[in-house]
Image (cartoon, rainbow, N blue to C red; front, top):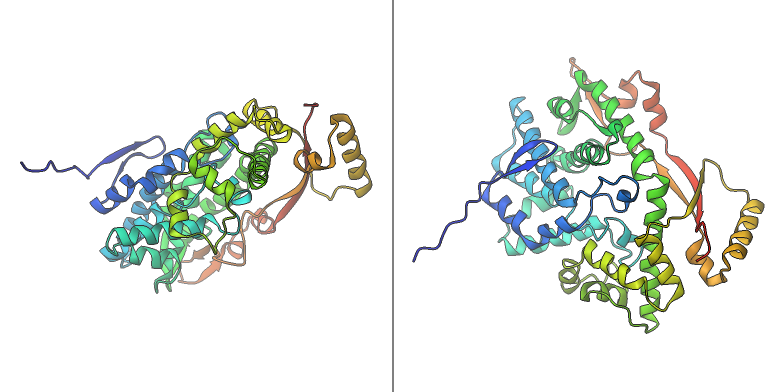
Length: 411
């Protein structure tokens, strides 16, 4: 009996771009792989749905959107005479598809709590190398490009730079799902203006205003969405929950959790001991593990963990004060004393229920991977020098804000 062949020439209906075509059978097989399918269970925006109820989209959707934009970028560059071989084309598709495959549950929360000392980019690379073994070396060039080791640097810039397919997708997608229209960039126009000059990705002069809009939109999305004070405190509570759970488990407390989450609670994981076995367990960890555990922990015996868990599950979020300047030390000490007294917290509990921290936002950096504007006379300028928009110079400077947060009522 002849085995039934699978139709791998699929299309995906995306709410942002419409129909997206999967370019070839290798990409189809990578999408179907369990490593990539895990991204269906990892939220793109962490706890932002606590502020924007529509923000439930996933890393899976984002990665599919990125490969669509990459297909358009390759077509535009070829149309303009830039030579991109079939092997290079396939490699950039693979690299952009898998660029986020190493993200942990709730995106960035795990990097600050139970898997420390190793970034999601490093874990993505480990996944890609493992897949390369499984797919008989077919990801080798993609990995080289992803790491920035390939001779044609513009291919890496399409994946990771200040105007890459990653940013073009997440700004537009996150704008759509949050309903924050300020982030709705013109990705079509930006890609249509792409070109390559001396192996560097550039934007043609006609696209300068679209670049300005892109940079301004990025700033607005960070302050209005990604660093929204309510979303910020929700993520801080999540991190504190995981830190407390890890502390209890290390002391011998038995906590209800999936086997994958339990492993990371029991072990100190960093870049030096992140083995192939660790990668396999990480591949089974997603938002569902964390959220189901937190629901269980609402009724655990530890007062700190149960209180934090209830606050997150029931959305009893904290008071947040955010400002441009440093907090006055005297006023801060007085506030801490009042909070500790009002909420009847011990010194140990204060470490979990009073947070002092900073957030920073830099819409554009002049240091690395500058956005270059190509003029008709073949000259090239950094967008800051090319733009007559004074805001672009201002937006290239990092902005730091200081905040404190703590529970509103006694628990």
